[in-house]
Image (cartoon, rainbow, N blue to C red):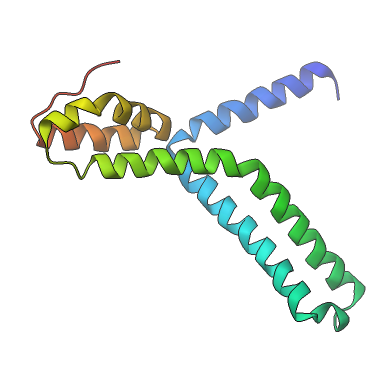
Length: 138
């Protein structure tokens, strides 16, 4: 594969990932939970000692599942918890009733909404309009 083909494929994957910005948190959560499930399956496999009863193909599959789960979890861990933190901040922000406190934290809430996607930014905008606060354009 040529260098241009690799870079164009990388660009296409990057563009596709950015087009799914609305769903990054959902995708990351799903993949992270599946990888934890894979690790848990292998852990139970080791603890219960069922590897003695299974054939070599099932043993290899169980070990590969655990290794893939660990690798995926390690790579997704930082981004997953960053997105989850932004989501939790936005949820807590939307439970504040004091207009002064809402204004004080608005910049961070807008940033969280931008990171999570337009769906969350629209929810934030709607929440602020209900409270009678205009969102700053950035």
